[in-house]
Length: 450
Ligand code: GCO
Image (cartoon, rainbow, N blue to C red; front, side):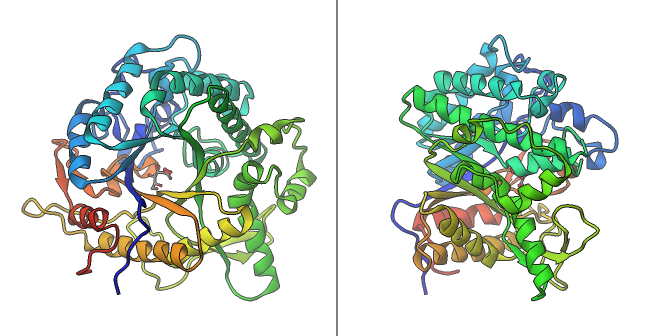
């Protein structure tokens, strides 16, 4: 049976600024919270930092040429806020603007349409010094930054993404503490979440006011949440966990309200007084699409020692796992797409990230990453079923990632790319999955021989 995608389905690849650019002290760029965080001993495996990363800042032309060879229609990347505003607000850094204009022009010449993320976690450190996303004024600063980007790059950008994974930035950065800025405080986390969403709404508003023709949306990290077994307590815990992980971030934007079940639990512990009158109207501005990042599912078991959501993640034994230890579970992607359709209607969706880390090695100039090919193959089948059988309005797919890159707290150890990066020489080597994906893009479906 051949697996074909609808005509016009958009195939792409994705990256993010701090993970690939390097050149952190060049071109007038200011410090970001990830520069600060990665330089603190013990935060990142092997003491890695994004100082050089893939040196995409200097090698972007080569990278665009590789993308052209790959044949993708679209490329998702993010703008580093401190390259545009080194201090977060105030004067625009023209050199930073020029770098992204050069990149956008190179993409345009290569016939590749950009999808630009405004915030992929590298907040200017200067704003963190004033409280970061805990401070409501950061949302105002974000709206100004967004406006500047629309004005400077709008002629070359057909698709904007305000935020990448507000859950991860809020919770991993402010509750679990494993990402920048490294806090561990739930109330602060919720305040940060709210300001992230508020700033999203403000940036959408500015986009509409400018009358731009481009699409605008937001990207979420998502995971389909399953109870560990049939017990009512497990089901309830899974429901609450889904509230914390997914609905807390989707609902305000797409339904104009926070999910009541988990909200009332939070409110028993502290007032959510950072939610001001009118905020939810701002947050729920109409958007053109929703971006879905999917890597694995989540299984929850009831555990009353865990505050608020009373559940903890458990792992399925003997499951197939990626180099991150994440369970390979393509059905969870289909499930999550269907859940989105059922809860939020038929808004266009893009998979803005999906992929896997593998222990890739170069052997005589080649990288055999059949594990990755198999992972992608199965997720593509799940996507196609979601479109064909569940009627999900899925318009496109961005593979994470184009290049091996700085995988946050894991440093360079985890390789997600379909292009291998030798971090000593910065040389790029196309993995087998590159050629396989090239075929998928060309045939708009799974290669007939697979
Ligand atoms: C993410 C991220 C990426 C990660 C990827 C793999 O949005 O979590 O956007 O930056 O590298 O998800 O963990």
